[in-house]
Image (cartoon, rainbow, N blue to C red):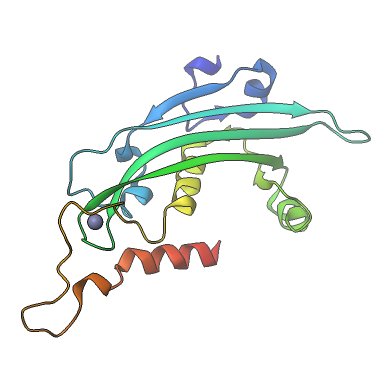
Length: 180
Ligand SMILES: [Zn+2]
């Protein structure tokens, strides 16, 4: 039964046949790669709500295609680039994916496909995909709309403007974007 399967081991074929959406909440503790990019010095973060559905689409002249729709909404604490305190950032995921049978097919078809391609796995790890998507959608320059405390603009020694120093995570996130 779909309801009893773990979101890390979804049976895609059975899921598509059931026609049922799946949904749940995941704690940040289960997403270590995402956690590494966050500022956990503030109050505990809320769990992330997600919803997903798999459907089979009939294609003329070929086998049916398997598609996945993933929706998620997260409020993630990141370091404000202005005052360096935790700032909650809202990140939303709403994306369609199409499963293909192999990495080779994914590479061959990727340029011609508007949708994202995933390699079919009998036991699919939905949380890993969710984590990938949240990492991709993290703001590069997180900031409070208005900072709770005014940033310190001048150090006593006058050597540097603290508020203008880029945060190391911003550079990392940029690297990740470029490499994907
Ligand atoms: Zn701030």
